[in-house]
Length: 344
Ligand code: ADP
Ligand code: MG
Image (cartoon, rainbow, N blue to C red; front, side, top):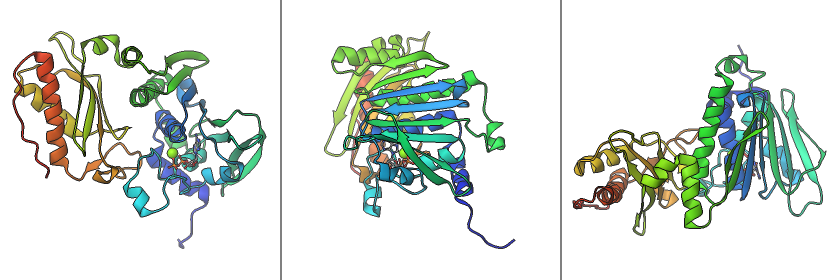
């Protein structure tokens, strides 16, 4: 075989392998784009577990007509322009891959209107080179992405889709994670034409409490204590609940770093230690938000951005341990052991 450059669609499909695992990953990417665009309301409509149809609509900034084609191309992003930007990233997106990837494995249309533009425009990519067609459309300020027939042209992927119910549950969980981090944003989720979730924007403490209950179970919201601690570098806030020996909360474990949900053993390790220190049962649940300067953490570890690397992992761990330990002792009503937190 001779060496040749892959057609755009094939290159995008290969990249999609990493970003678009299943319908829930499409929803994650699209909803994160809405948040990056400053939306205050996001509606998600799903049909047949997302394999038939995924629609995500927002009231954010929109995309200008001249940029619609770029938005659909790979490595095109409005969020980073330099290595410096990449090292101080605060937006969800930065790889400029999601729309190109999703549109290479589904029938995708992008409809948008900016404040400055009198009319809305719709774009879709077609053919091997994914040439973008743009036509006038009707849409209020904001953006709608519609992805139909996911994996219709990648049968190997399509075979990995599970039952509609299972795929929908993943979407539901994905939205729950995002909604927990963004209480000021109104989210709705519907499946096969039926409204399934509605998370109203929360402003007052009472509304926050209600929303936490709606997302994580009211049992959790009632049992949880809130925690809030910090120094110049690190801030930790959120809530923690410990099971009563009969029913635990281990299904509620959400950890966010600068607003991004991540999987990290560090928190679970610190939690286990905090619970042990106070002789508490291990079936605790938490929603924890850690904020730190973006330079202190690398989010570009994995294309789906599930993982992060802390530059000072030990220091971060001990800081979280201290915060959790205080919360556990509050729940347990016991003495507080002191832990040394030294900058590494
Ligand atoms: P990334 O989010 O990594 O930049 P995407 O492929 O997800 O890459 O999106 C490409 C670009 O399209 C974004 O940088 C942004 O400028 C634009 N875009 C995508 N979705 C939206 C949206 N919902 N509202 C406004 N702009 C959007
Ligand atoms: Mg994106």
